[in-house]
Image 1: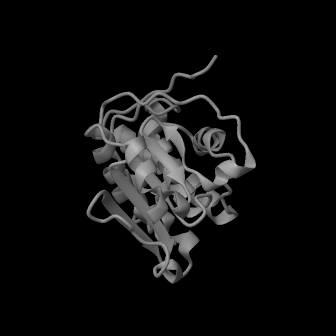
Image 2: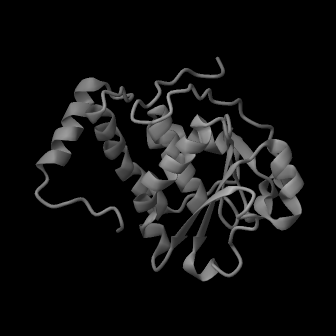
Length: 215
């Protein structure tokens, strides 16, 4: 039965329910457009936020935009309407795919702010299939208390062209216990259950060395 019921992550500052949307009937041309992943949360390519798309962005009701780029893309992947939308710029330098998790917290806070206030947010990269998609998957994991597999499937059902590299998949698998530990601290209920959260939380607390999320 669609849509499925998910437990909502209580660590989110926004308590409003986000109901998963039904899968789309995907066509190849849709890769050039943005798709709504969760109510009010869109993922797409840079083209969806280009200067020719202002009318469409306003019609859809976009209020916040996360602009994701590699350092060598800074001259061409950038905010086009800084005075019309709230922007968060995410720039990854060096081995870009190894530093995605360090941006999950600020991106999640920005998206929470957008959705809690009744706004609508677009997350885009260059093609909207890799780095930006990984950040959306991480947000879905956190917000709906889903495993990486469930969250990535949900995102792919709405934007079928998403393609995460092995490095991104590895990092998102690493994010699962972090998500569970956050839920345990704040009284959340991830899919593994309260006892599982407690073990994950204790494991993180017992580490003598700080966890480096940038590698």
